[in-house]
Length: 126
Image (cartoon, one colour):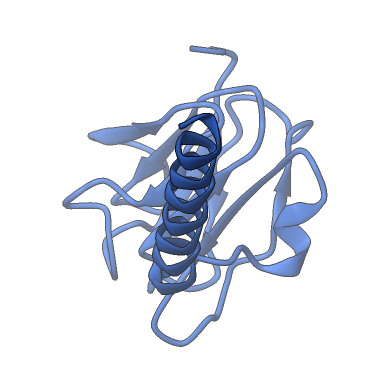
């Protein structure tokens, strides 16, 4: 009886590990540009053609408007400990969206592909 339970437990664990492995293998991953792995960094990129803006360090001067080189970004990596703003304009005026510390994902709706023209690092950490 004990042997049968152990056998069933072992088989269940084996089947669950196969299922979890298959799930991990089929889940698409968004890889950061190599420069973004150097912590802390803030990176923007276009996931369609893998082009990216140069990375900005976590010690980039706060409240300084940085005009982007291209405007075709749709994905962001904020591996810094501060909040960043993204703007529609190249002069960092008008409305903006916030990118919280540690956020990795799509740019906010309305600031995605072709709509973000400048960024600014803030002093806020949350």
